[in-house]
Every structure is written in structure tokens, then in C-alpha cells.
Image 1 (tube, rainbow, N blue to C red):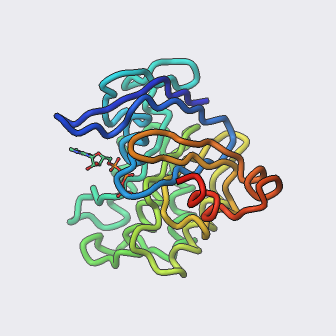
Image 2: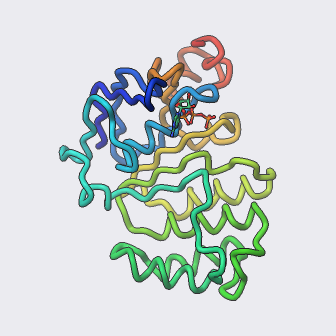
Length: 228
Ligand SMILES: Nc1ncnc2c1ncn2[C@@H]1O[C@H](COP(=O)(O)OP(=O)(O)OP(=O)(O)O)[C@@H](O)[C@H]1O
């Protein structure tokens, strides 16, 4: 379980998060949604230990986020962070060397699933294939928490579909928890358990998809519009 307790974050004078309180339960798929600049990436980076909160705390399985605890989290950035001169095979060997939890066999299976080949140079990959590769190295880590920041950014519907399929097939929800920020709500709401809605740096709602559909009789996009 991940607990975010009264977390605020400022960048100099700009306030990105204000008093965020939210719990991410084990074994669930949670979508973090909200308008541009509402604080989704900042929140996910704080949970992953990539940013420090200005105020408040984050607990992962009851422990404060430290370098050691962060190793329980695999984070897919919305930005590219690869060594461009590597081939895919070299990148996989690099990840295998630096992460104790990297599952090389799973990475190879994922590469096949994503139609990527060892010898391809990262520099020459299309945006879609680059994002597929980011997904491969993230999902190949045997960690309890997987966090995806905007995994569908700029992708065509075919690639988005393969990304969603890879999540369903290669994330083991009996052992893993998935949190993802996205603007592609109508495409992923079928696989989500919960949504967290952010507005102007605050978490303004945390609801189960079942409640939104069954009790409120709405789709997630109309629910979000009503909440705003
Ligand atoms: N490194 C930074 N320095 C200064 N301001 C920042 C920095 N990172 C984020 N911000 C600001 O914090 C606020 C929240 O940004 P954040 O990227 O978390 O929002 P977001 O909901 O992920 O947006 P988007 O949907 O556009 O990706 C914005 O006003 C943004 O400009």
C-alpha cells in the first residue's frame, strides 16, 4: 500500500501540489487523471522518490520513501532517458546489470510481444516503438509497484492497444500494483479499478470505477467533467 500524507510541493514560488492525501491499495490499477498542470506527474515523481515533497510524507508498505524503498517502484517517465547509441539488446543487458529485480527472460518475451528486435538501434526507433521499449524495461522489473506517467502520450490507437494488452498480460496483480496518469481516459477506464482526480495541485476525488458506473451511472469522462 502507498500512503500519501498531506503532501505539498513547491517549485520556487510555484505551488504544484497542496495538501494531497491519498492511498493506493495493493493489487489495484489506479488512474490519476486531471487537466494539464494539475500535478499528476509531480505526485507520481514524489511517490517514486524522484522528487522530495516540500511538506508531508509518503509511506510505501509502511516505510518512508528512501533510496532502498524506492527500489520497490518501477517508474515509466513521459520523457526519454535512454542512451541513444545503444541497441535494444545492449539496453536490456544494461538494465539487467543495474537492477537486481530485472527479469531478463520476461524482457525478451515482452520484446517479442511488442515486435521489437535486439539489434535495432534506439536512435532509429519510431516514437511508438520507443514507448513500447520503455514499457518493456519497466514491466520487466519484478517490483511490487509499477508507475506509468502518461504511457500513451503521442501514440496511435494501435500502439495504445498493444500497451494496454501488455499491462494486462504482464502485470501480476496478485503481487503488483499499477498506478498510471493519463489523459486517454475513455481508452483505459475498462482496466482501471479506481480513479484519482486532481485539480490545481489537489486530489479532489478518489472513486472506484464501479461506483461511477453503477451508482452514478456515468462514464469516467462525464464524471470528471461534473466534478470539475
Ligand atoms: N521542475 C519544475 N519547475 C517548475 N515548475 C514545475 C516543475 N515541474 C512541474 N512544475 C509545475 O507544477 C505544476 C504541476 O505540473 P505537473 O507536470 O505535475 O502537472 P501534470 O498534471 O502532470 O500536467 P500534464 O497533464 O500537462 O502532464 C505545473 O504548474 C507545472 O508548471
